[in-house]
Amino acid sequence: MLQLDISPYQRFLGLVLEREGAGEVVIRLPFRPEFLRADDSDSLHGGITAGLIDIAGAYAMVTHFKVGVATIDLRIDFLRPARATDLLATGRVVKAGRRVSVADIEVTDAAGTLVAVGRGLYASPETPS
Image (tube, rainbow, N blue to C red; front, side):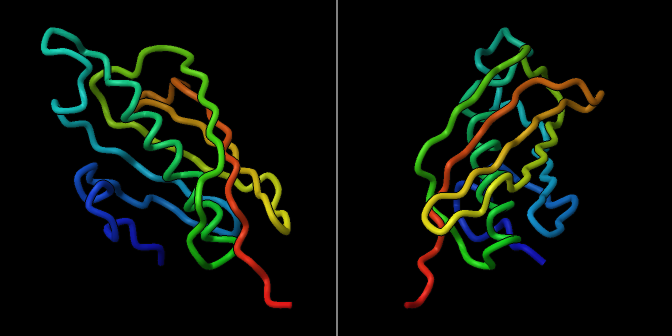
């Protein structure tokens, strides 16, 4: 089983692994008021969603390669504000290449509404020659 509590940032976020499989993970981010973008807002800061997207993509890669990977590039489309609710990120490996690998990530709110999508490029682990 994957361990999400190996980094201080991930422990701070309080991430919960909901499901893992070959090339796929589902990670829940429990809502906390500290994630709001402003004191008078009910919308989460985009950086929280971006971090969740990156983590879900990287861990999808871990289910494939069995080791950690480094992020090369990350693209995010924020489709609507993520409100004060838990978020669920589903990361899937799209391509596991020799040097660069690609994962797609979808983030939904507690009602199942799609709030953001992302695509991450990750450095594939080196294979012994």
